[in-house]
Image 1 (tube, one colour):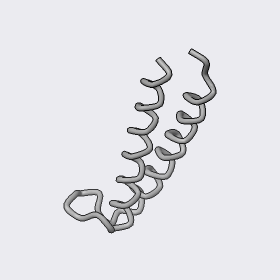
Image 2: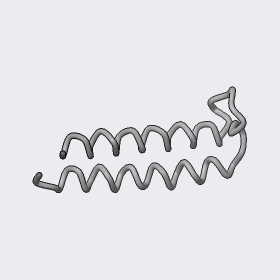
Image 3: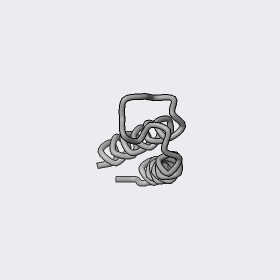
Length: 61
């Protein structure tokens, strides 16, 4: 169960990073490219991923 939480948190963190980079315009090819709202959405998503990683590492099960 701990491994599943860890992997899911990593996926959320990666998606948040992707959205942030698209919001900054560094990754092209999407409707999100260059839209600053996706930068902020990505940053919040990355924060959720980091919290999930901490939770996965603290749990004992």
